[in-house]
Image 1 (cartoon, rainbow, N blue to C red):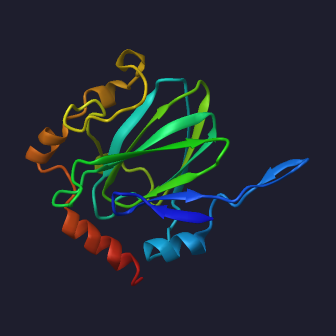
Image 2: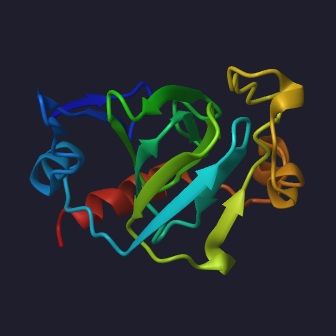
Amino acid sequence: MNLLELSIAGAWELVPTIHRDDRGGFLESYRADELAEAIGHRFDLAQMNVSVSRRGVVRGVHYADVPPGQAKYVQCLRGSILDIVVDLRVGSPTFGAWEGVRLDDVARSAIYLSEGLGHAFVALEDDTTVAYLVSESYSPEREHGVSPLDPQLAIDFGLPRDELVLSAKDAEAPTIAEALAAGALPDYASTRAYVRSLGAR
């Protein structure tokens, strides 16, 4: 598996080697040892989520309070998505930046994003199925979001605006400026310190 760090620190694309023959294909879609070597600590799996979405559905931008935050390992099992990592860590050199990576059922790549980063995706096909391995169980009081359509973020989902479908919760989420003013965003220095502490456990 090839691990490629993205332009936002704390996020990686994981590209597997697919072994194909006349029966089909085989790949390692997750390797705990290789991921731990890259991120500096073990990824503790607490929960696995699966979503099924029609074309144009946008989920996110979601993040969780740090500590403990919620690291995610995201794979597209069927169809295709544009997976989006957003740096919401106040004080980060890339605060407010985003990066998109296509995940699909052909290349079978995955995205890992560390605690404190925001996550979103748009389904590019009907019946797109996405699996998320997460480091902490769902806790609604610690879960937050910012608007995926925030002009300041200017995320390009690759589809016309009128084709994007959002939940009521995501549509009503604050802008990054509003979340910043409310003190709701994670702090870069304390988030990085918390992530470093995971390696000492």
